[in-house]
Image (cartoon, rainbow, N blue to C red; front, side):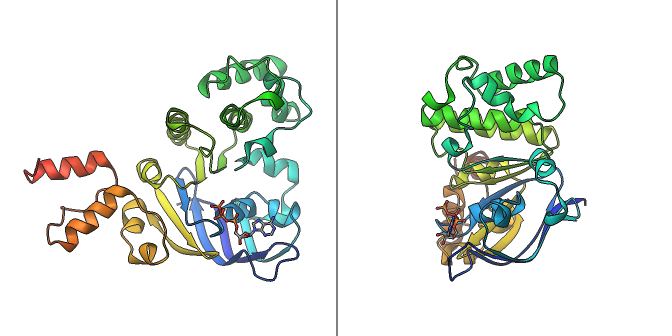
Length: 283
Ligand SMILES: Nc1ncnc2c1ncn2[C@@H]1O[C@H](COP(=O)(O)OP(=O)(O)OP(=O)(O)O)[C@@H](O)[C@H]1O
């Protein structure tokens, strides 16, 4: 097991707030795995993402206690520029990600690459390739400030993918997207996983997380209440107690269990549930 991010008893309070946004976070994230971060509104998901990217407290200010280690090195030991290439970060608000200084989507996607020493030919090749993958190839000559929410979210995603970071943190990437756009994002996440990237994704769409993630980190009221495989975490009673959303298929399986009609195990996708029901001859 190779740990790439570790939280050691991390608590953090934003400036001018009395209550810490997150408290006593302890977790280890392994290289090459995909993590889904779930929890109700204001449970601390974004703050957790901001912490691993070093934005709290460097950008936001506030008080940090404990240690956040990236590749074994404490956050303070990382140069800002170095960390921003090592960890790609797709913000919750795509409009916040757009630089506002580039005139075309093409330039916007390439912006992060400009300072990394990538040769121009390679840079153009990468921008065109990624634009196709995230389906913004028809927008390349548009002004980034004239994009719709969904288009902006795709461009923000493309800018981060262009950096080819080993670790990619994505905070609610589908909030502005329709169902097709959402599926596109999850397909990209699947491709990133296959490339061996470490992906951390905060999302409310738990049904999709269950299908794509290796592990789930569940948060409530600023703390991590559970971490483990999708199957382990989603069946925990504490999630229901803390009003953490769980996949519909898990709710159904737990209900069947209550009625003494339990499936052979807890399914985490519709496909699995159908297979289990077929196996015992129910359908
Ligand atoms: N910039 C900020 N200044 C002060 N408090 C903040 C700031 N950002 C977040 N908070 C507070 O920190 C707590 C955790 O918020 P956070 O945004 O991390 O939760 P979240 O789980 O991502 O929520 P959501 O699902 O609504 O995006 C909340 O109480 C929130 O009000």
